[in-house]
Length: 116
Length: 111
Image (spheres, chains in turn yellow, cyan):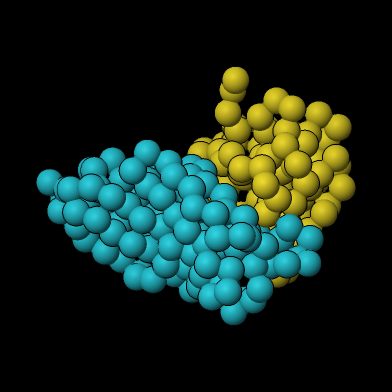
């Protein structure tokens, strides 16, 4: 069974630009959640989608948005990039809705975004 | 509120034991443990539900003290492969399964 696939792996953007990251969950998983990880900050929750609906959202500005398609693939978009957006962006999929349900999260290898 | 993990970092010799704690100020429904090796994705270790159930994964086990709202991860006879950052995530009762992550504990195992 293929794991969670995130593309691209690396991305370099300039301040003010926008970026779209993609996540393909494990086959059969309908829940996808997104996280921002920076050194020393742990995992900061961005949002969670289940069956194309945003189920939960973290404390990030409106520049961060996402969506989920009918095949459960998800994208996140960051507009008007700032230097502070440089981070590793991870997505995780699971069988059931709710990151904290009794179903393990399966993480992708992430997209490392560098904003210059 | 983010759960508090302690210690922040620990260095061990291969074969030594370690305990990582995760404490919350809220009543907990469950505690989740993940390990992330350098440059890799976090990997699921175990989920503990309220009820004080202890679980194990290889020589790694964990307990959940519901009254203290605390979970402890025990690494016995540590191996080099145990190196990485360990994250706990907590789910509070009535939180709609919202998982709140701790800041992580960095574990370094030396030969």
